[in-house]
Length: 445
Image 1: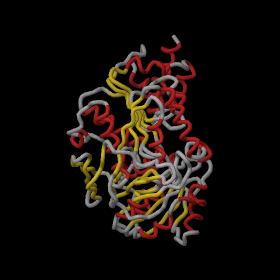
Image 2: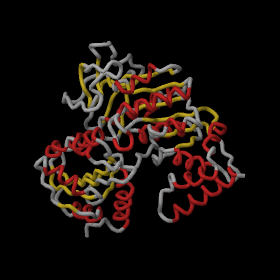
Image 3: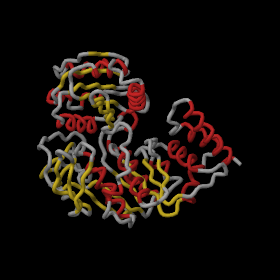
Image 4: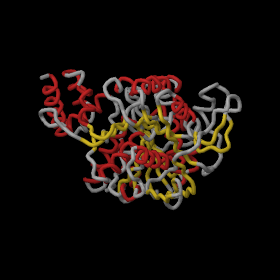
């Protein structure tokens, strides 16, 4: 009875939330779990072929959605928390939306993005067959703590599962260490050639996760990702199961995986990792991936992942929520040779992390290399980010609490493109502003 009440309440809250213009991605699940705390434990009973979990600091939503899209293109029915609500309540919400009023549903696969802090409690209820770990960077230190705390949590989560296939980013030494855990079968993917300018910008994983000595690198990609080796204990980048080579970043991103050519429409070197992670999973679960590119024709980029809005000039929305992610978005932006306006929105709500000191770890000095036309700051911590730019001697042209005003100002300027960089809780409100402006004639009149 508690289960049926929880399902009914969750469905009613989902409908009510959507009528009110909300995403309803986690609230219904939160209420349902209060009525039936064991509801998530129902999930494995209704999944025929396997549960695939994606964890990591950056790239979770994109990787998870890519896997889901590839499976759906093969005709499978998939349960997926597409909007990135990756806590327990968000997963329960996705499950309720799949259920009928009696709590019944059936899917072939479940593709679940899970916040690395919440993997351990989620694994009390479900045991994944395959787990992807995309990368580990410093993120929301007031919530997660330093990286060693996050890795310990993931190790405990992995231990709970027992037998588990792990798909790991071989270029990240912090991910590779999970392949040494008992009961796991690791599969590694990585980029096996020097692609980017060799800037030693390692901030997170400079030291060996096994012995603590400083690692040596043959080449870097970004942050701690690259071809590394510990001179003290011998820990090094492992042999690669899914190897990326022949990378071209312009005009479109092209590369090969184990000799098979790939081409993606998304910008940013980091997106190669998302695509090859999804490709790796398809192979690990025994699904043919020879036609991987064609499987993704129906794939839609998640909100805020180089999402383009077509006004009188392109407006490109990017989620940038930690130093590693921000630096990669800045690098992608700098590769765009058009004259550009940049809007930066920073909030400090609970889901962002209250502590915004991480802004000082972002390489904002590189923004001056982006053919900058105008810079606008907004969000709850607009003064903090403005101060950060002041210390880089980069002029902020406007400080405003209104995202709508910021966008309209850029649409009237003589730039060729506008980039909007936002952290987590600013993402959906910004997307709503941009969507509304489009519906109301563009907003530049």
